[in-house]
Length: 421
Image 1 (tube, rainbow, N blue to C red):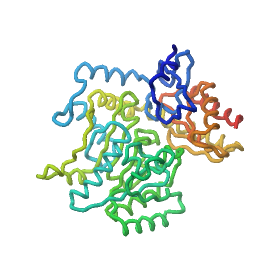
Image 2: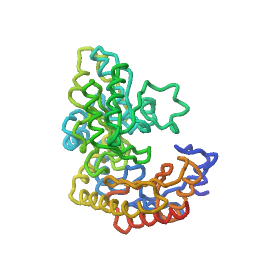
Image 3: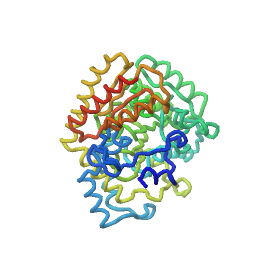
Image 4: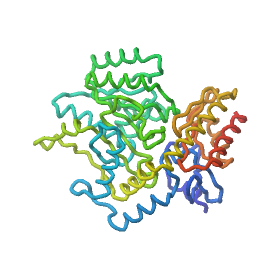
């Protein structure tokens, strides 16, 4: 039996209706930007395997760092112990995070990073003897699949069956450069009528919404307004973090810094799962008390796993090299050139780019998981490029180490796909 055939006996894949699409492609090898399936076919990973493998698959520097760590310390509980890889990672992160961040809390994945942030915000006010239960979030945002993260997400395609069980969320539109004043009025009204604990947002780019880019100045005004009403600001940088926007973090483009930041995906360069929720010293201090119950009693078994920390430390080392920074700048420039070119195509409604992220919207109506999306996905794979459309949005988020030839093939494949629509 092939791996694909064996897969169907027991496995249940995410984001998939098995009745309609029972097959899953078996990948047996990944190196650099190339995925190889069990039949020997190769594909350029143009989305970095959900924005994680930004330094390429099986990067030698990262794998060797992890191998060395595995010889010394594999796993140790982080409640009673600490270790050098976690300490080193905290120091490296604080060095590159926005200047107001000072505390690092470990989680397992992007959803749980957001979950911890939501709980931090709620308990922050609880510890101050103030009960706040409402959150503000952008329309069409996505923050994960655990219940708190689902609550602040706005994409019903993921949340539909669970809407009756979610938290109290007030949604606002993303700033587009013209609607900031109305949004600020809306926030002021929400704050006057509700006890708001926090505002959860994807800074500058909404990933699952179709890589939608919003106005930086407007977002800054929104954050200032939230702070004026003592609403904690929570930046979900799970997708945007670690260089993808052209800077270390999307929050680096914004003057007003978040109180809490959620990190994952490229944190460990796609090697092993780990996430982090960072926060200001002010938030951390609110949990210090002679009362045990005021501590943050939230924990994951694999919190600060030494192997994951070693991968993250190596990834940050690479991110700060001149070579990677030059590559990010070169990819960003290439995207801008392609954006100008493809925007003229009659089947392209809009195109945009930010750092290594590029996206275009097709001038046609498409279901997020419909037949035309499946047709495009099959076309890309047949051409040897892995691209995963989000409804009528085709996007690129390539590894930083992609070659010019590989990147041009991605562009050419997207352009060719427009002829089958």
